[in-house]
Length: 265
Image (tube, helix red, strand yellow):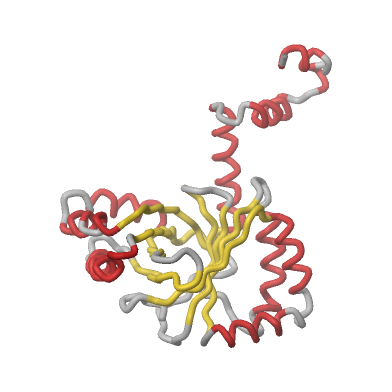
């Protein structure tokens, strides 16, 4: 069937690069398609990423009757990583969801780019860190990890204790729209910053792709409501929301509280 379709188009007017894209759209699992996807990811990294750090976003779904035991085990594991100078791992934030999927915990780790992650992976096997990680497993229903990079215009906030709640917003973008989403959101965020500043914004590079996260901090839910209502009055914000929503396949909002050992509180 493909050969019959191809015969309808003169080969001399179709550049090889265009033919590769056409085939990629059909045979998306091919080696050529995977290589093209890798090139696209690298292109995005050069344009929109702050390349100094790599962030691991770890999501743990915990058994409802094991939450307290999990919290103790998680504190031992993550503070152990943080305090080991050989690993050079920093904690960006550690949170529990109170609105959204319940009994779910989010941990954001900061590595010194890909080489820093490689270094940590070499040192953890067989160590106390591996044993501490294994101690978490009996309390889990499932777990997932993504490797993400910061948007260049919005570095992750340093540790602070301002109190209140955090909102994690997650966007599943349509493939191929990340650059457009970033450009639109970057313009609009200047208007939103006059009211409240995001404390972090990342896009997935490995794991579930085409996913964007940004994290906000508010004094409470009432403050969040007021700030969001006032944002609609700022020039450019309504247009940003409209345009970015057209690029997203799904959107989620989670309200989080920081764990006692989280550097963001």
